[in-house]
Amino acid sequence: MTFTEAQLSQWLADFLWPLIRIAAMMMAAPIFSIRQIPVRFRMLLAVLITYLVHPVLPPSPVVSVLSAEAFIIAGQQILIGAALGFLMQMAFQALIFGGQVMAYSMGLGFANMMDPANGVQVPVVAQFWLILSYLAFLMMNGHLVLIAAIVETFRVLPIAVDGLGQAGIWALLSWASHMFAAGLVMALPVIISLLLINIGLGVVSRAAPQLNIFAIGFPITLLTGFVLIWVTLPQVMNSFGNLVSQTFEQSILVLSTR
Image 1 (cartoon, helix red, strand yellow):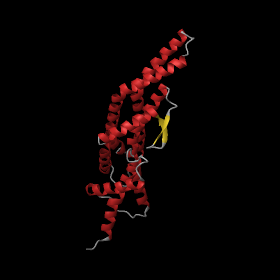
Image 2 (tube, helix red, strand yellow; image 1 turned 60 degrees about the horizontal axis):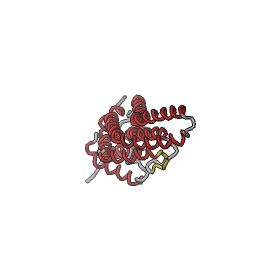
Image 3 (cartoon, helix red, strand yellow; image 1 turned 60 degrees about the vertical axis):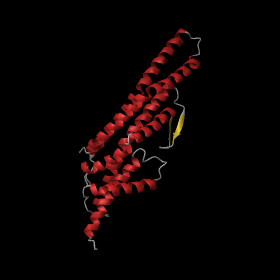
Image 4 (cartoon, one colour; image 1 turned 30 degrees about the vertical axis):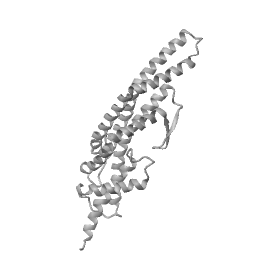
């Protein structure tokens, strides 16, 4: 059995370019990019996924591996994969942003803990929401849908020199700004409730100046905040599920914008 150079080049292109895009998504997407998952395991998983899906992918252009065109194609694959992972990462960052706003309203802005997934300090309320969001994401098979989404990008954005353009990058940034608004909407019921409580405490402090409003107001605000977190938790998780679904739907549209 003999193989020609053209056949070997085509096989290498059909496997190498999808591998770069899928590996870039693995390095940026939630769940896959957490620090507890070793980089070697992520790369092995990327190789396995590429091996399983490359028979159904469109043929890739054959270029010399050391040519300038090959470096441009590799950069485009990294950009597309990282963009998809960035979009999904923003859905989780919306929860962190909402948790931070809520923690500051409750007076828990000083209570921070290390986030083991990202290696940064976040308020405990945001960490609580983030843990629940990871569990909800896995329960709704979001990791499988994410793999299906990266495979779908090969149809809307075939492997070529002209991949993600300037319009797609601006669409990506505009959709990312929507995530912060979504995080604020999740925390808005608690923020408004605590604002009304603080207004009431302000009226009490003016009516009875002899009361130590700091000794009374902080326990009331803290206890009310915990109660509101418990009451609004189903709504927050439902909003997060809708946000993830919208992100999956919009990711292909955003990446395919020319």
